[in-house]
Image (tube, rainbow, N blue to C red; front, top):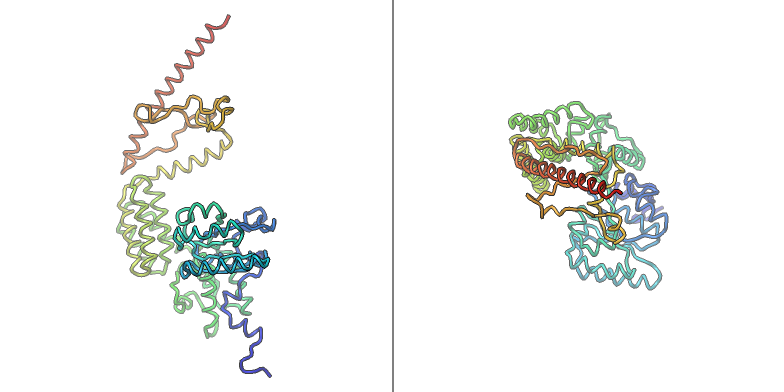
Length: 452
């Protein structure tokens, strides 16, 4: 008979949080992130070679940064040491480095995983460099912020940045099935409720696991419907699953109302979606897209206002932060509209696809060596700042492409000013063409005169 305080392995497992029980035991069990884990992908190639370098994992929460760091340590037989930049000071770092040195002397390396590494200041980040260089530690950092802005250039030069993506709905579905297998149950929820659960996680695997764990502890009879699930969950739920017609009808109505410069209709459809339980973060992403697609360069403040509204929501949360999103929607509806940049981008992509192998003209190629200069690289390049109106009018397209008019600004907002700049360029380009034609005729005439 077991003692009162004895536990079996099974009991210990049952007491573990579901997220810990679902943590993959090997890299091939990781869900998602094929862009870095594939055979020819950066991390996959590292593991195949058996030689790891220092890494910075950059991605949103709940996509597996900590899990991957643990698996890398296991697969390479390195001691795994985890710290968080939020709770770790200089003294703690020194102790980590000293312990790693002792392990190194005893023949074992250390993988130091630093969560939220961007929270360390520049001086603290510099403190890692000598220990990375002498092999005392193999650094694996995790950050949700852009490393280019938040990490020292010296640190970035010694580590490879790998971008982790939000989990897709299919990947979240796989995670849901794995969780049910681990729990030994099938969640008694309808198919619509299941899709809503995945939608609520919004690409965050950890959020999905927490929701599953919450549901698995409920006492109820029968199958839970979409409305039942929404009433019971403490996390705000959307009534629209991502493939639902109503969801797309309402976001279409909001987008078209903004495009049609109707602030009253736009704010109404926004309110309808929020009242229906739509995730404000989804709306923040969509209005940012509207500012790029439908306002563009006609109002240079539009994108910044949308980004600031999104950031304000992240800081205030609901319901206060939703007001910032609403104000951004009103601003977009009243802003001057232009899709010229959007149209130009699509045209440029189509042109690049059709002429993807054409080289740049010789006069704008880089000429770092004497040999390249002898081959004509950079020859005849006109420095635009020295030209009248700051435009030389030279051709910057491949010689084999007739110059197209890709970007055509409209007579609205700031694009009216850009249109003036474009006219100046067109005039300068015309003068340059005449000059080039005249020079060509002169050279041809001279060659004829030189003929015996």
